[in-house]
Image (cartoon, rainbow over all chains, first blue to last red; front, top):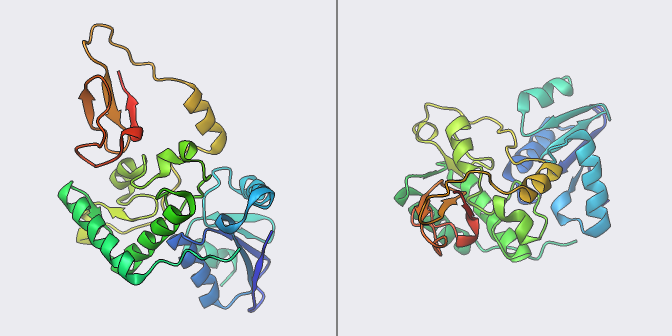
Length: 93
Length: 170
């Protein structure tokens, strides 16, 4: 899986599954950037073949609806959609 | 993979005007946040180049048209989402209340059934039957338009969805 890393202050392990064409994903990514936290992300729509299938299995495990953005916090909590308040709470910001 | 599907601002602008005109003429409203809406139209055009059809920019397309028909914009879920949440899933289309600013947009839950349920639904044909009708009734899955004729129209006269978006209703 092609994972991009964004440097920032540590607020836990953040993995964002997003689509490159989705504006809500873009907003979520921008929110994390604005908060200045460290996070990883991948654009699932730009993946191909088995890589895409494997990634979708992970997304499905966290979010059976397989919708985006799916943000996984500390391998324990999943936030689906652009939910500013929930994301800030999860990051204790 | 590098994205080589960059769409020009001019193209986005032309499509934006067309979407707006068509929406307003059939009783729908585009999101009044122009930058946001242009971003969505950019995504639709990228998807058209990528897959050959304008699937929802906020959903993952399979690349197989038959499996993605329900999420080709305007998607099958637009009208119920606009009714319930004031906007469709990606928020390209909004309700009059959102347009007027009396309703706030929130994150909209996914109405599209998950992959396993979609396959199941596709395998089960509709059950409504009225044996005495002289013609079958076709329903546009996008806007709900009904017509009684031998086959569905080429294009929905109400929302301009293509023939493939019709289902046999009765």
